[in-house]
Image 1 (cartoon, rainbow over the protein chains, first blue to last red):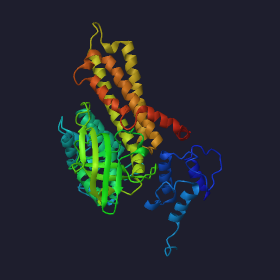
Image 2 (image 1 turned 45 degrees about the horizontal axis):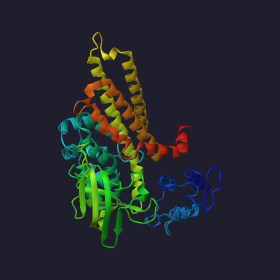
Image 3 (image 1 turned 30 degrees about the vertical axis):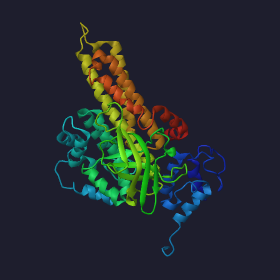
Length: 84
Length: 380
């Protein structure tokens, strides 16, 4: 997880405060309600220039910091053969 | 701009010396006292509906200046029912369909019909027997299989339900209580299994308000429109435009009612002077003007910034309380005349919807408290 992602997450987690956010931090426990989840979805897509694919758009993706980051990383990775 | 929106608007690209304003178009095309369908047809033929769509993500797909002009012009000419019918379609349905049109030829086709004024679409989100703010608990189900989709459930207090050609139905397609568990289904309003019951009473004639039953409504897979799992997110984002439309309409209404009230106060004699000369009356009227100016400032601010869900709740609660307080005060200032048939007392009753439809004020305030940190940070 990069620092920007952690900062972005923190701004959507109402109970995070100054608590450390680690990969296995449960997002719901830290205050990610449904409205904030929706805002986080659009914020992540805007910040990383990705579109979370239909098959990953489910509750499991928004379970922990790691599960969400894994989808972002996967979508941000260059498609083989297109690297410059 | 999506290709569909571009194509839909291409027909109006003729060079013209004078680009008519929305106000001029409404004055020239909308017959006085027309019903919702004739109104939508007139707005489509005049190009008003398509002129509202914009590429700006910040303005949620709708040009706020033109939206304000439209609602002000309609408020001045028509009863609230047909205006509500248009308001929901332009602020919510059109942008949602445009989003879905990117991946759905069916949505693209219906969008084109809407923009031409040939089709009306009702947004069917609120479930029967469920609070409008409890969308995560929605029970209307869309069972999607390889061949199509089957809808079962009920929707209530749906604007345009009784006068639309299509229903844009928010339905659960996965069991998890999560925002990704919902999809849009575009349903022909007269399809087998769809039934409509008008809402009791006739508080907002012309709005097509009523309740829908969806019993084993079987449709092809193409009727599931948009990207699966995004329906609730898209609706939540579009609520900002709906909140803004409500506030812009409230601003037009309050300004009109205050101007009418001032005229009446100036004309009503107290023997040696007029009611307008009474210091207490002037004080009460001035307080209303201050409230309207506050609403106006919020409207102007809202047309230049992104309307987050939390900010949308501020907009909606302000709109509801301002409208109620101004109409109540004007009712008192006008006295018995306000109780004529179709007088101000009825207007106040009708516009109580600003504090109910789309989320009651109490729920808005609870949401604002929940997002207080975000709202206060934004002011810092």
